[in-house]
Structures are given as C-alpha cells and as structure tokens.
Length: 133
Image (cartoon, rainbow, N blue to C red; front, top):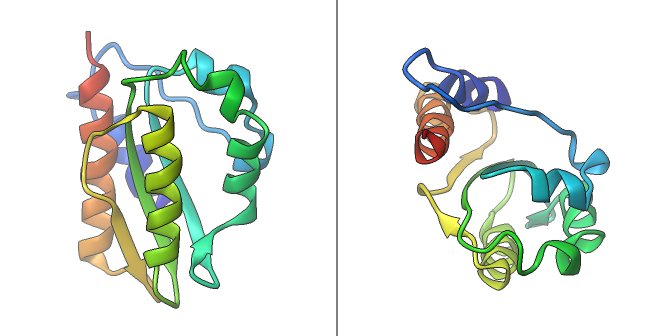
C-alpha cells in the first residue's frame, strides 16, 4: 500500500512537490512542522492504530498543534479486523490538530487487492495535488 501511495504522490503530473518518507517511530515534531501535508499509513492492530503512529503523535502533538492547522492529509490502513477504532483515533487526532481531510481513507482488510492499491495510488496523488504551487 505504501508503494502505491508513493507512486501516486510522485506521478509525473505532480509538480513542485517534494515527497519525504519517514517511518512513524522516527517522526519528530520538526518533521510535522517542515511538511506541508501528510499521508498517514499504518497497520490496524486489535482495532486501533499501530503504536508507532500513536507514538509519533504523542511526542509531537502539542508542539505542532497550532502551526499545522489547515494542512491536508490522507490515511491508509491495513488490518485483519475492523478498523473503526483506528478511524476514530485518527479522526480525533486530526480534528484536534485542525488538519483538512484531502481524500477518503483507504482501508484494506487481509491482503490488499488491486482496488485497494489503486485507491492508495489515488490517495497519494490527491494529497500531493493539494500541495502543488
């Protein structure tokens, strides 16, 4: 799913957008502050976002709270169980931050099929297109 999002965000029709990738455990407040938009992706474990993504927000939330308002974001999730809890958590975090949802979340259960991968590619492209100058 990550590779599909990346392919969409780096499509040749997307111009003047630099795509930077960070594993969730290495994301800092500076990374959030330096970015103009975000694509968040994680596995859904026990119906909730992965600990690594939660850690990224736990360690950065108040440092980025006002400075990142209005920035576009997208989300892709993958798991073998329901993702409702993960969606609620991400909605709560991004609403609190004042981020703007650029596209519908992509949620895949079990092995992502071609439809989910196509949706991920579109997700990457849509978020990147919101950032074109």
